[in-house]
Each structure stands twice: as structure tokens, then as C-alpha cells.
Length: 294
Image (cartoon, rainbow, N blue to C red):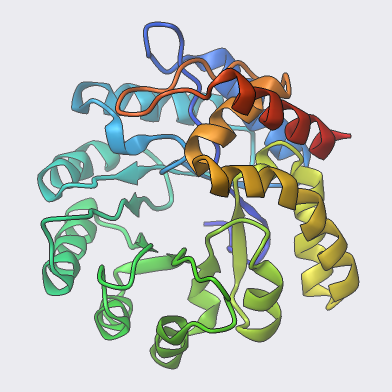
């Protein structure tokens, strides 16, 4: 497995055709564009709308990703979010050479103890440590997360609990008291990265907007690793206009269309239960996406 501190982790959209089937060529084109900017880890989760995959298409989507991946790159798919779906998917995942898989966080009918048990069952059925995705305060406690780590069931943790001020985060402080920061990845794009890597000593970060300009995202990782915080701040600001639109409209919907509007790959329609942008939104996203590439 490629270490998470050696590459930015891209979280790309999944391109589909008009019939909503994942299609090889635009996905291959986007993956190779991302790899050309130095990114070697691809995580397919929320931005790829793995939440809404049909059970009947799971194996074919995994095959598409495996067959079109750039050389010397890690592909990490996701499972879930429901317990029953993830357990059935574990048997399918075992047939693929992916180094790990992420468990999508389920919202609603769950408890922290139940989530920990579900992740434990999935990791044991899959036969490999998994990526734990922390997206809300009431999903898993730091202590339950640490128990999964202690039992060898966690490859790394994607931390993506959004705060108005990322420097004021009691949950993250508690988590880092019981889990080694080298296992935790900042999971919200470039905006909180400086604090997370400089002050919290997290291992690395995921990027959505870096799918458009991967070389710039890679440059930000290198700037952080060399403690060139001025350069990192300058790069962070380049990503902010598109990130602001993602926050204002919807992160998944904006990124999905931004890739198409930047002419990097035709991502096609979003699957229900999501919908595309309106024309005014599309114009704003196109301008920000093209500026990020300029």
C-alpha cells in the first residue's frame, strides 16, 4: 500500500453515460490526468456517489477502476453505507487486488457501538484493514475508533468533520490523544490542510478540487512537508473559489460538473437521488474550474 504521507489522496467523481452506467473512457481519462500531477492514491467514495451504486453493478464498477488505473497507483473503493450491503460487498472485494476499502458512514439508524461492530465485521469479512471515515461527531467515538486501530482493523482514518474554525475541534483533539496522527488524513480538501498538517501533524490530505489541478495539490503537500507555509497558503487560496462554490451549493454536485466544465472528462449525469446544477450555478462553477486550471 502506498503510504498516505507520500501522495495527496484524490477523491474523484465517477463518470457515467446517459443510461447512468459507469463508462471506461472518461474515467480512464480523468484518472490519468490526476496521476499526471503526481497523485498516486485514488479514493472512490462520496464524490463518486458510491452511496447509490446498485448492488448488481458493484463488481463491474470495481473491474472498470482496476482495469483503467494508471500504473503504480492505489485504487481504494468504498463499501456500504448500510451494514447488509457492506457485508455482501466484502465477498466481492476479496476478488480484487485493492489494498484496502473505505466504509461509507451511515447516517440515521445507528449507534457508535453498533457502527464499531459493523466496521469490525466488515474488516474481518474482507480480510484486510479498512479506511474509517469520520464525518460526524455521533458516528464513532475516539475511543471506539482507537479500539479498531488497536485490533489491526484500520489502515487509516479519513477525518472530515467540518468545523467553523478548524483550530477549535475537541473531537479531533480527543482522537489524536488515543490514535497516532500518522494514521489520520485530513479529509476536507485543501482549505483546512495547513492547520491539520502544521498544528495537528496529520499524515496527509484528500482532495476533490485537486482532481482538476493535481500538480497544484501535490505542490501544496510538498510545501507543507517542507514547512513552507507561505507557499502552502498561496496554493490554498487558489483552490478557495471552487471550494466556496462546493460549500455553497453541494460538494459532490459541484465537483462532478466542474470536471466536465473544465473539459477534463465527460462525467455525464449524476445518479438519483442527486441532480445536476442549474444554468446560473453551472456558469459560476465553469468560471472557477477554468480559473483553477489557468
